[in-house]
Image 1 (tube, rainbow, N blue to C red):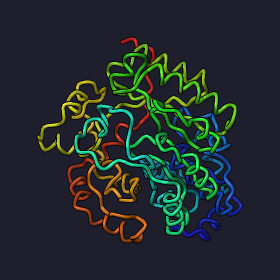
Image 2 (cartoon, rainbow, N blue to C red):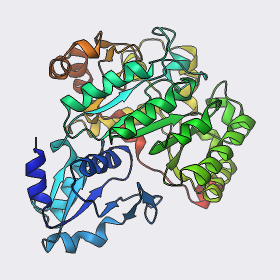
Image 3 (tube, one colour):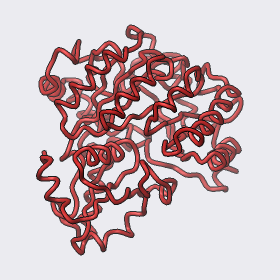
Image 4 (cartoon, rainbow, N blue to C red):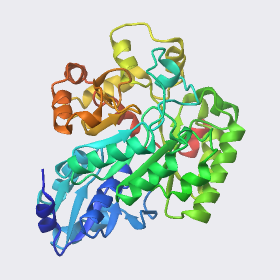
Length: 414
């Protein structure tokens, strides 16, 4: 791992570019700010992000900066949870030197904590374990007081801690203490990220007033088609809250980035796609379409083993734009790559720690506050589940689906 002092030496008298403008990249930016290393701008290959801003910094096209970095006037930090190695390979191919012209975020911090501040969800989406797994863990909320203890321990044990995702499998807006939790995170100069289905917005204004950095919205259609896969959700309520969130951002916290993750299914890639794309443009939201997939990885492993899936999971399979068999095959083509989920450190609302961020059931520690992070990470490295997942090539499964997929007019018409 690169120490803070070594990082200062690498970045000294150079323009610093963070390649990756989503959660991991923004977290790296926050950690650099915390140790007084100035950032010049973000870089990102996604066209939907180029020309925008994140945390007040411009998001630029990577190709435009290679010559400046080659000249010795800049340095790139590859900051993507799933694609930092690919970014590093690309930097090498264009003549940049590792350790001098570019470094990887995993060399600064190899842990991205997520804290399920709300251990429950108000929807029962059929592609998600909250809707397709009948073995649900205990439900509850993490208090702001407990969160403060967790946050202090994380900062102590991770010097270059960048971001905390305030969600895993739950709906964070259900926690009435979320605004205070966000304020505590901001005061610690750590990036706070929220993901919501926007079907509950009782304290939405208070949440925006607390100034979260990153707000992700999940959506999977328009009108009735939305309610098929956001099961239990109400389209009119979602649409109203989406407009409300954009208005609150503009009035209270214009720097907050709002990304709408549009889950592509076979039933929502025509007019639904075009309407949502147009709405995101109207409301100045980042539109990020990508193929939906079956979650959690527990269900994918069961599928490979020939075990019977829940009725909800079975209903999901024929709706997928990229079928499960194709997704597994593509993941296995990338099986030689390291697991991106090793960065994920999912803490449950009751302070128990999940073994992996993409698996729903196994837990590896009863109480994060009582066990050193180093010990928990050692348990993860020796995990039989982890070894079995890699052996089957499933560790790359989510990365296959997360790539942005924009549809042209011919595809949507078809």
